[in-house]
Length: 275
View 1 (cartoon, rainbow, N blue to C red):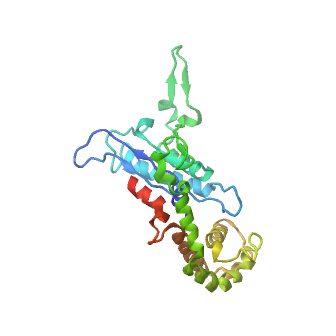
View 2: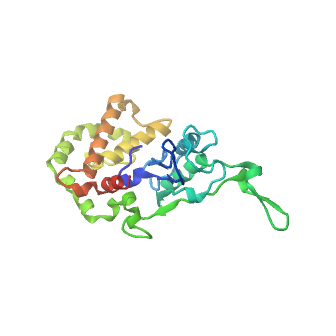
View 3: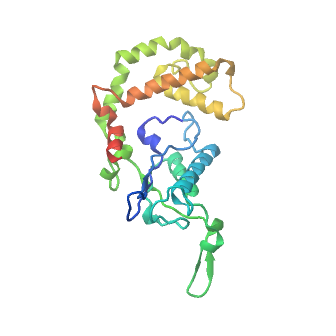
């Protein structure tokens, strides 16, 4: 699903490092990853769905097969293929149940349980202890609360840059006073009001406007994935769903970027600088 800001879109950012190289050796991989499918933001708190869990797990397994497995197609030099070495991973995700759980699900696919043979230790008294859940591997995810506070906040500015910049937030709010916004707000009134029978259990007539373009799109989009029935679903033609997404895209783009106000894109700018 579309993320509202770069910081929400990010989900997790593993940096897998290695030691030495030859010209054709993979030294490391930087992954900028989305979160998995989640519940609608209309009913907080949002949560990672089973579908989302399956998505991020499958993604982790893909990266495992490509870079980490002993038979990987593009193995990272020196990376541990079965037992995770946490010194070789740097995984970060904002403090959020969807994002943290997406990171955890991804890592389960990246380094799955290793079984009784590898997932056990012998103690000094001769006792053998097997890790729970068939050798499940615990991999820490660094939590970032904001770009303006917390440990090493400057090092994490790219992850939540906009949330810590008052000027960027002010710039984003300027969009709601622009001629472009007012034109779309007025020209799409009838379109949104025509969909009120679909969303009137959650949105009022006053809320059913372009001002809430993303929230309305998100609510309907999630419903089309998870709900067996939707009120007045005959109104949700392919053309209508496309228009909802297009308007939501426009809404979010203008909150995140303006050519004459570069500060509005601080989140994307700081992310790009880190890459």
